[in-house]
Amino acid sequence: MNNLRLWIEKLQNSSDIKIVEGIKDKAALEFLGISNIITLNKPLFQIAEYVSKKTTRCILLVDLDRQGKILYSKLKKDLQSNGVTINDSYRNYLYKNTDLKNIEGLITYCQKDQAVLNLLFP
Image (tube, rainbow, N blue to C red; front, side, top):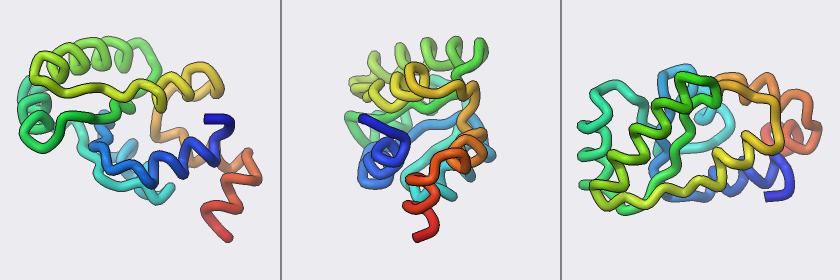
């Protein structure tokens, strides 16, 4: 993924379940035209069981801060033990190519990128 616009387009077109921490994170992704999002509103093992009944692949987009790293590790382990493959490319892109620490900050971050603004508001 070369840039943020492509990152958003790929997420928009992905049928994989996207897992985020909270409703503000979900709202930010929905604002960007991304769907099929669930929040961590139950114990992690219940989320893993739910996802495993729906699909064999998902995208974890929990925050990039310390707490998000802990959640990511635990949830990834739970999902994998339930047979779900994690697509790490989206989260890895954010780590390597932005200074974001949380998903809800994506909207503000995107406002700095004219190509993304053109995608959102043609």
